[in-house]
Length: 161
Length: 410
Image 1: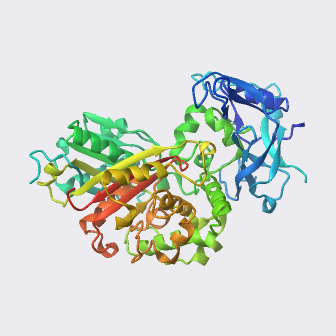
Image 2: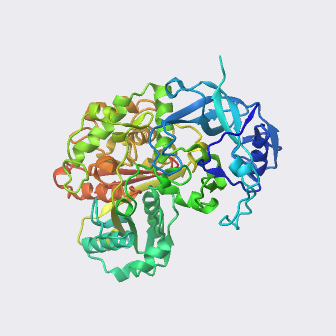
Image 3: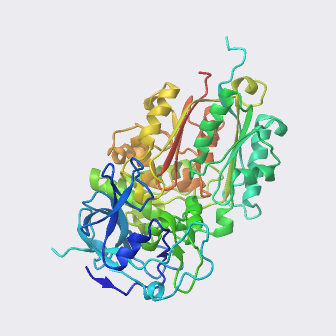
C-alpha cells in the first residue's frame, strides 16, 4: 500500500484524541488498523475506549485494507470554503470484511462509474502541511487531551478488475 | 364519569411565531412570540408554567427559560436534533402524569435564514459532524480554528469531516441504498415533494406555494446524488410553542384539548457513518411502541405529520412506522396518497419541503397535528380528523420520536 503526499491542503484534517491516535499513526505508515474486542470479538470503528457491545478491552488489529461500497453519494454542492472548489466528489461508506463500515472518499474513479458493491482498496494520503513538522499551534482544544494532527488519512480507490 | 383528578396529558395551547421569514426577530424573539401566542391561545397564566423544554442549534433550555422569564421546577432539553420536540412531549406526558409538573411549555425559535442564509445543509455548518442539528459535535470535539490549511477536527467528526460529506449527503446515502435494495426511483420519492407543495398551496404562510410536478423535482439540479434541489427541505426562520397540561386543567381553558394518547422515542446512532442499516431508522422501534401505548394502529390515523427533511425521510418513516412494508414506501407515496384528499394526508401545512424549516421542524409537526384535531386548519382541514401522528427525525436519521394524538378523551 502506497503512501501519497498529495492531499490538498484545504481538507479538514483530523486532530485525534489519545484513543484515536493509533489509527492515524498507522494510516500515516500506510496501514489500516481497527479495534477488536478481546472479550466478545466485536470489530469496532471509529476508535473507542472500550467495546461498544460489552465494554470490554479493545486491541488494535490489522485490516486487510479492502472492502466494498455499501452506499455512496456524489456531492455536487458544498458551499463551505474548504470544499466549494472540489465538487463533484464521491463520499462512500465502505464495508470491510472485518465487520465495520468507514466513511471516506472514492478517488481515481469517474462519478458515473461508482456503484454499490464495487470493490475498493484503501489509499493512504498525508498532507505535508499537517505532518511536516507543523504543530497544532494555538487555538487547539485543551480539554479533550488532543494529540497531534493525523499523520495520514484513509481514502479509497477502485480495485482494478 | 371522569376520575376526580384527570391527569391525562393534553396539548392545550399552540402558537407559531412569524413565518417563514422574519429578519426583525432573533431566535429568542421567535421563542418568546410563539410562547406568547400559545399562552394566549389557551388562556393559561404564564406564571402557572412550571415545566419547560427547549432545544436549538444555538440555544438551550436554561438560556431560553431565562429569556422568557420562566422558573420551572421541571426542565429538560436533550438535543436530539429536529425531533427533540416529540421527545419533549413524551417527557412532558410522564411529568404531567406523575404530578411533577402541571403546565409545561415547549418552545422553539430560530433565525436560521435571516442570520445565516441558505446553504442547503452544504455550508460551513453542513460538513459532517457539524450540521445544523449537530453543531455541538463539531464545536465540542474539534479545534474549529480556520487556518490557511483548513481546519482540525476531533472526536467522531475526525472520521467524517475530512471527507466533505454534507447534511444532504447523509440522507442521499440512505436514498442511494434504498434505491439499490428496493428499486425505489427518483420519480417515486419526488411524489413526496409534489404532495407537500399541494398542501403548501393551502397555507398562506408557506414559503413556496406554486404547484410543482414530479418532472420539476427530477429536473431540478442535483445536490447530492440521488437527491435533487426539490428533494431537500427549505431553510427559513420561525418558531413554535405548545402548552401541555392535564385534561382536567384544560377544561377551564379556551381551546378543545388535544389528547396525548401515546409517545415513544428511539435512537440508533448519532453520526451517520454509525447508522446500522441505512434503510431502517429507529422509528421501526418507537413507532410500534407509540401505537401500542395509544392502542391504535396505523390504518386508523387520519393525518400524519412526518419530518420531511428530505423526500427520502418521509419514505423511510412511512415504512418504519408501519404504514407500508419495508421497501414499499416508493410505491406507497405514488398517486397523491400524501396530498390533499389523499388517503393519508401528510404534512398538511406544506412541510419542511415547502412551508417552513428553520433548522429543526419537530415543533411544527405538533402544532399542525393539534390544529387538525381541533378542526382549525382552515382550507387545509382534513374532514373528520380525530387521530393524528407526529413523527420527528433528528440528526442524520439518528433519533426518532413518535407522538399519537386524538380529539377524544381516551
